[in-house]
Structure formats: structure tokens, C-alpha cells
Length: 114
Image (cartoon, rainbow, N blue to C red):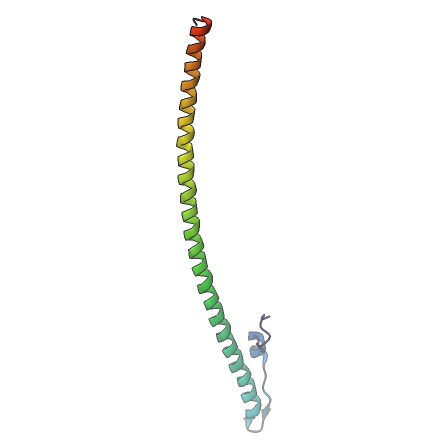
């Protein structure tokens, strides 16, 4: 059930554990051994949680950095698009002006009066 080989017990194992009863009650050595396994598991769970919390913090930090970098790159791209868009519109205006001038010159040169 657990991915870590160091964990010996599952919740089901703890639930299903039956201690043998002798004349004075449970065998102390058996109970102590079982409790030692539980303590080892809790210690391992704690270590796993700490490692995962560190990993989450690291990944969160990386995520924030990547989002900031993405935002900067996106704004640079938008600025570049705006700049090229205005250049394109200027060149389009220039092209229209050139076409008008050429048309006027053709009228003069070829004598077309349209």
C-alpha cells in the first residue's frame, strides 16, 4: 500500500492485530515489539512528510520564478508585436501613398483621365 519499503504497518495491520492473552493479560514483550514498529512507522512518516514539504516549497518557488519569467517574456512579446504592428501600419500607409503617387504619375505620363 505504501511506496516506502521502510514502513512496516498499514492502518489495516494495526486494526487487525490481536495480542495473545496469558494468565496476567497481554504479553508485554509482544506489545512492546508491536509498539516499537508503530513508533518506527510514525518516525518514517514524519521524515517522508518533511521531505515532501521541502520538495513542495522548492517546486512552489520554481513555479513562482517560472510564472514571473513567463510574464516578462509575454510582455516583451506583446511589446514586440505592438512595435511590429505599428511599423506594419506605417509601411501600409506608405504603400498606399506610393500607389496613389504612381497612379497620379501614370495619369500624367499616359494621359489617362479617369
